[in-house]
Length: 366
Image (cartoon, rainbow, N blue to C red; front, side):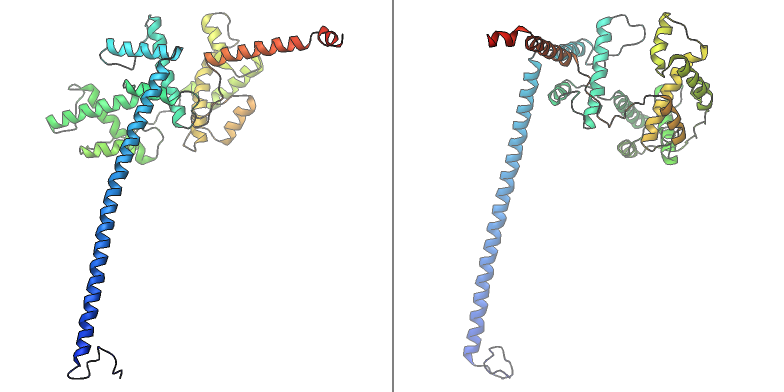
């Protein structure tokens, strides 16, 4: 037993100084607790102030980035180059066609300016796909921002899908059903049927479906009815795409012309400047397009009609495959690149001619 312990309760009546020591210790710990609470309150206040300052700094940074982005856009658009010319043509087209930025060019369109603008718009979408995959040399970021400023549509399929989804949402709110007849609304009926078929393909693990998780979530948000899913009909490949029938014809084409560049000769045959040795050669273009499409699926590990043996046979024959969109392309050089290359080659030629003059060294020696 420790008689010096102030908390020893064995004694029926503890001395008064023991009680005073206990009260003093309680008061001291209470003061320490109050001090700690004050420190915590000050720390929380400082933390709140730091958070507000951090939020203000982020807002200011975002504003400066936006201003700098606008500055880059304005500086880029102030230059005189072909890209800016087509950009302003697209702005005029949007103003004159009720906000349209797709620039449709139907078959039979005879307006050359519309055709050129349509090809330019399609080229921007293609360049943007490579930009998303890390290949940034085909379009600059400030040009992407400039196109976003006027509401440029980067994916026509997604744009059409969004319009159909919004129209379907309005229809369901008004009629409270997803069963739409072809007589009532053919476009929405095909859209709903296509969604259900795409869901079946997705569950079956088939490649040909356009349903993403984001689209499924949007459809589920309006309680879309996935019922009445009909299995897609299995169709055999057309004769022009059957490997066993078309590969021997391709081998004969290679033996006749010495290469597998079918499309180059098909253009000449259509113009009438030459005639194919065999009429079967005319359908090889469809076969080659199908094989290149299947080869991209083969590289991605997706189901396709090609296997390693068929790919080897076509490769050994000399077929040139398309590169996937995720693989950066070689810079073919646009108008500006070609112009700079010509100037550089001309300067190098002049310098070489000057160095090769036979009298140059003799004059110095004299």
